[in-house]
Length: 31
Image (cartoon, rainbow, N blue to C red; front, side, top):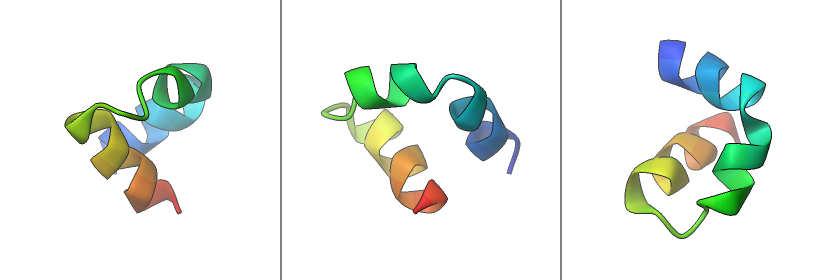
């Protein structure tokens, strides 16, 4: 959950690294 919250704060980072496996996994958790 912590990672999801961190991703929410750094939403732009998730979008920028959407091709990264780790970032993409976090993004999918948000969705």
